[in-house]
Image (cartoon, rainbow, N blue to C red):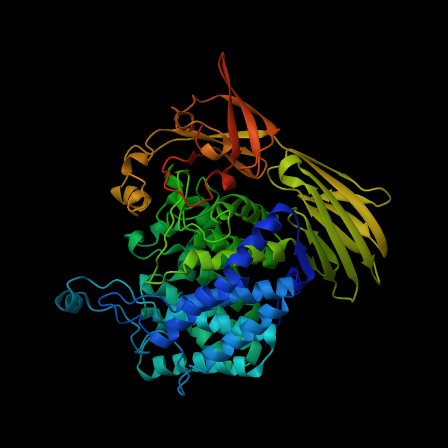
Length: 630
């Protein structure tokens, strides 16, 4: 197996870092409710396991469902949290759960929630209409097996039990062999032009890395070959990404095939395969894919896609992003930073995390949003794939927190990069055997001030780098007794054995961005915004221009939770050229509260404002709770 290129950055092992402060409190609250509590074990987890006993996914008529994804998603989050927290009881629960699931594996190696392992295609439209009275659109069989496989691999990584790796290998081998036996190409399976099925690439590559079985590497190569075809058959992900065109222009009718989170998952797999093969065009395709998303799909909430579809989201002033999309946008950014060292990917990650991601996590930790909106209320779903206690976005939330923790500090040779500044402690190992303990404290979000302390045991000098965020208008570093320099968006400090301390101060200004509403809006965008039976009417869809306000990495909003009156939240838009100053105030309802003084010509008035993440992060029937528009 070929090792990763030597210049890659290595994320902090989850067991070597601990978040602190209010962010850690939010993570621990969610982890308790969804991973640790009796309810999490006896109700939430048990429902994911029952899906394998009942195997109902292909028994609901025209459209096969996806109950099989939830076990793997829960397991990925739980194993990561277990490593992070060193929680012995959770480790024992995970082991029992895996033992039970593997006990349901068929002798052939099949382990799934479809009764027919070879039910891997969407039904023929004519046959579906005749038999069920509706056209078939969904089949998630291989997508579900992707998450089961990945969950097993993560459980093996945590527990090291050989039976888990054996079960994962049998599951993958059965899939590969049965596709070959029936003459089926993976690219033709499932829904959305085979994109969800193709996202199995990442766990297949991880399995190859764990086993060295060339069968899995050959299958990985077969998958990527289907994405660089001369005939250009949709989705042709690698070839299309290398073309540089916006995703929504790759083929007609992107609303029918351009599934956002699943497509980003495919590129995660492409990067993982690059780490094995070193084939540069694989990494280059992911880099250009990211660029295409920034140009055509990047929205006002610092995420990508329009309610889980790549359909030129950048053209819309009304934003709605699926948390799964936010999480996988962050993952794409983190993977690209690890391979390139380009700080811009960290800037993208940070904006998505502090805004759209945190906005999706309910403040009581029990649930999360299905869609994060720019205004009105967020979109919540309480039954998905006929499951009552699990949801695709909710089950993915732990991965967002864990990805942030892993990326807070990274190592490349003798260079330690501090990437994020929410308080944390970490212990990092250098390739030559040296170690550095880090402690990051301060009021980064409120004041832009960060204190960094370190205790190093080194055999040779190392470099400590502190990221200067793209939003900072100025940055200073105070570090008595240590030489430091500023290099391309980083402060660099040369350190040796011993202790040290530095203080980073970041200046920021209020940034006002005007946004123009499109004149002619495809009805599809309005339907994707409102047609969810969650109390938001089409009249909430915005046709007026508006401006947004950012302060450092934080998008601001007006919200009833911050003390805004309902009429004020949805006032007529301010004219272009207005100015705003902010004064921090205390609040028990929101994380960051401000009194905003607005000046427009001769007019001056004060209005409450808060961080967007706190503006609507609770389940409510109030369809006019907040707005990011001023």
